[in-house]
Length: 313
Image (cartoon, rainbow, N blue to C red; front, side, top):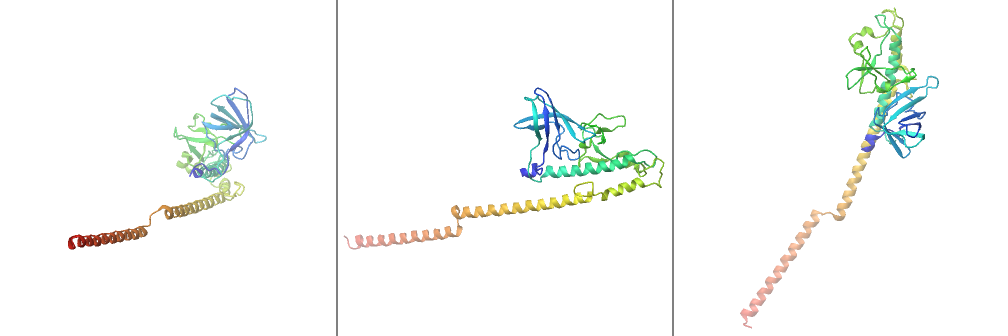
């Protein structure tokens, strides 16, 4: 049950950490796939724990800088307490639990929705709607606190803050794709109300006859380069089959454990338990022995009575 709750398939955030003694700022660069992809990033937004060897530090927030040339991700964490020593070593956020549990599948769903939404929004914002205006992002997220919808920064921007900025004049909160999850994804309310705002054309004055951008939308379903598993449908199919295999494995393991428990209980009862049939037989034997003893006593009583009272001895 603990593995099911915490299992992340042995994947955790890792990277090279640097910081000066007494500083409340720690930077982490490089690392594995989780730390080098905003679509796979799954660390807490606040109050997370950074492990530096045997030392642990909690952070209040962090920002992310993406190098335009190398594409390297650089994280800057604001720590709750100052560093006790100079830091120049690998850092880790989260434990590595080698089991495909709930966190793993939540991460997979988030990666899917972030990647697909980014690609869809990219096409949407480069096209034009039927009003001749450039399209706005189609897939958004909803902020649970304010109830407002969130739009996302372009990944090509040098600085991509994972923190939610105050709502701008357009009434949307602007943040990064890190804030998008499978639980809060939505479609833009304006597009839901007016389908003409879907960017079908690739020209400003394309009109209804121009549907080249719509063809790009359709091609997304067959884009085999979108995920390592292939097209979007392949990603979901593989994940679904993996869930089925894992679920069956857990069912089999549970059945085996139940059989082992039953075998142990049977062995224990055979040594220290009570067999009702055997105990009933023993009671009858004991009852018969007592009856025979009573008969002996009765005969002896008659012999003594005859000897004493009949012969006057």
